[in-house]
Image (tube, rainbow over all chains, first blue to last red; front, side):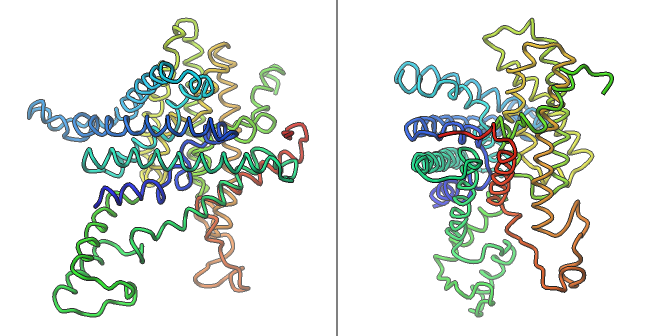
Length: 258
Length: 215
């Protein structure tokens, strides 16, 4: 269940473009035609799906404080997390080089239309951002890290697809000259970001500001004596199934929500 | 500006408005949007980029004749990553609260397109002193936009500047708040940064007709 939840969360609520603005440079530069946007979006999904789990493994077994204990107990005190940036970017650069070779072999037309932007994925903030957010939110398992990578990629893909489609259409609109091109794209992206904010209530189904202590206290009091809930979550009728879901959401919230 | 030649002075002045990295060259947008909800964070980020870009430009320019062309992107990434690690550790040591606000965006300076863009476009082909000036100029241009966006977002969104209340106290209802003025909390959220930047671009292009794209 938490896989599905993290998947939807990373596509809609923590959308790489609309919530955290990662990958804006290539988003703005490549969104003039839908076909190139689709190609770049697919490449980003692929690179994220590979690099986030790889970097998770690096983080888990080498970088985290105390991660080196598999080498021997004398290494248990080492904290190599200051090396995260260099190691993450090294993995990403290598993977992008690989993707470039694969794309050149299997789809030369896509390779030509993407041009310089394929190697530029290595410095796309979205890729490094995906790994860094994975690290800072302390995603607990490899499976969840992969789901997070794929979901973030799909979110980015959706965003660039939408803006490319809109930009193709507004070429025939009467945009004021000084706003044409870049200016109107920023404003439209802002409006789309406002639209995506409506997904914010999707998973918690109500009051997002409750802390975990409040939630566990509520659950315990429900279990104990069927007390009616306070005004802040009176719109939730919890059965025992819902209680478990709420607990899972609450646990997820501490780590995966900023 | 007696100690800089005209060409050198132009290296600093051009990126401030005419060739601004964010609004004209369209680089470095990610961090310009995400952390500008507070003026203090914007200023610190601008200083961080100034340090990384200035020093990075000099280092790459000093090495420009010995970097093999095939691995130059990797060398550039290593140089930037090392400088950013220094910035990150300094921030964590001396301004811990701020480093928590900036969170991953300090690390994302590595992938800030301005830095790699200037390395490729300038530092690899020019002398260290000029590369330093170019780095300072572009970082200043980036900083100007960041500070403008941060200024408006914090002022209109929270009624404070650098933490000091400007319009009065919203809870006690002093100053402007007694006449019914309310903070526009929406300005603190992500989408308004995009719209503010769109408006800045609109103003800039209206004043300088040469920049208008024609479709």
